[in-house]
Image (tube, rainbow over all chains, first blue to last red; front, side):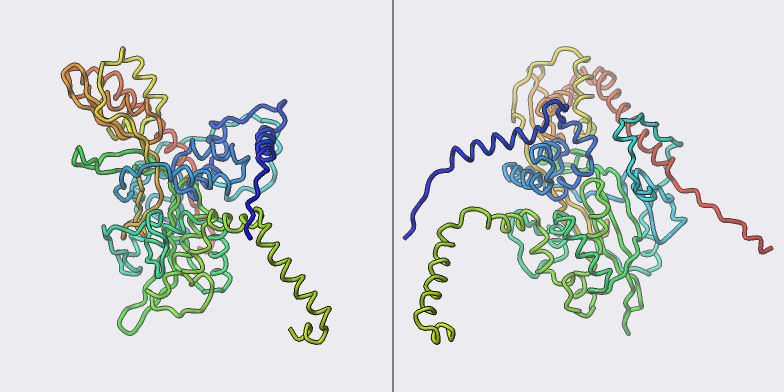
Length: 362
Length: 138
């Protein structure tokens, strides 16, 4: 028998009202504006845009405010919002080679053309708490130098020229889109990259780390890491040509991995690729490592049976909205399901008490 | 169009206000906010894949005077920005093009270039200058 139970409306309303109050915190402390979050918690905004899979810094900042800083909740809000937007088109693939770089480093070539540009990085900081920030210390302006107009060619391009690294075959084939079609296996590389770039940063990081620790040996070099802005262009049907429709910040990571060779092919380096919205280095590097691990089959490597080589395992568990949805639903009322289990346990125990020998055998 | 799409809404609003009264127009397609799927390429140069969406607002309008049609497709969800961009697109096809270029588009491009230059200057200051220690072997 299924008994519908109503009630709890008042409790829910009051809970939400209290939530709003708690969100605001102590009213004697100034309220945080969306613009402050966008400008001063930019890396949180970047993460929400990357995993929410929607580039809009104002919306991401609003989501962070509404979610009281719970980034997965904020990502949920962005994912829910994006489903309400009509799809107006698809961009021309962005040209990251033409990126206006804030940062560009290579761990493989010290003297790469274009140089090693550190940009606004946490690297080489001492990770000591800066109490000046708590005291709202004055900011000293960042030094400037003559902007450099020299090109910043891709590092993998140099290796490509000598045939030392596998070639990425350009193609304009329409890639699958997991926001339109549910994820199915086997998933091709385009689909895997889409799932990874919107995947949970912690999960993708953990997977990448596992490959470094030996669960699928694939020790890479960061051939290049670049952070900056690219122009996004789209074909406008009424006009019949592509125009810029905006500018987005991206982080790109290209790894150079150990070579493979065979009797027919000379040894060469292989590649992993990571690309994420915003300044999200940890994410982009992790993505590149996992991308490379998932390519074992096409590169003729052995299946070591490790988690990072298992596309179904990685891609089915990378999405933090799917994961937390399923995980957190178990806290919602399951009174009826539990009632039936309780009945069953009581019946078994009653049977065991009445007939100890049979009960134990069961 | 590309310049207007990327322009900060505030800067455009400010310059547009200085341009004078907004010309009369009618909507052919009122502002609509939606998403564009942004694509990337594997390894930066290879096959395309879907990276994620971005918000854009587009509209089409027609000037009352002369009937020039203006298009806009701008980043973000700001309908006023889309309307201003479409009006400028339409005006650029009229006798006011030169005026529009010198009072709005020119200064807007200059501001954006200056902002880009300021970032590039900071980036340039963080370029590593390697030096090699003299080891005194000869």
